[in-house]
Amino acid sequence: MNITLLQNLVDYGIIGLLFLLSILSVWLFIERKLFYRSLDFTAYKSKKKFEIALTKNLTTIATIASNAPYIGLLGTVVAIMITFFTMGEAGMDAAKITAALALALKTTAAGLVVAIISIVFYNILARDTERLLVEYEER
Image (cartoon, rainbow, N blue to C red; front, side, top):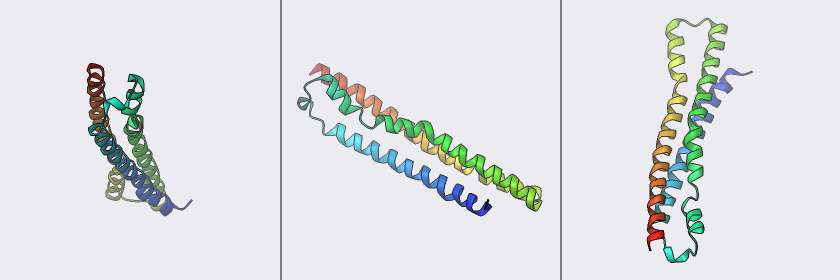
């Protein structure tokens, strides 16, 4: 198997996927906040339909938050495997090995950043949902 192809897959594929997931998370957060601001309580005849409308896309944000670290970890594992393979083939010195292993952790870091941001977004939206449900019941 071509090592350069695997390195590019980790560098561009995994990081690109995490970047895409972060954009999706931000987009859904903004969409939900705009929706919450423009809510018309009278448009919903039942609390259940109102709750369904409020919680739309929250599962997607939670899924991004829970899976982003695993995607990042996958990138790190593949990068470490590539480092060990290259080390065995070329006989790298300790400095190059350390640098390669340090760079391998970038996908885990990116996955954690995406997860933390998505968790914050989810918690903000969950709190807004609770507040709006109480307001709906008290009207």
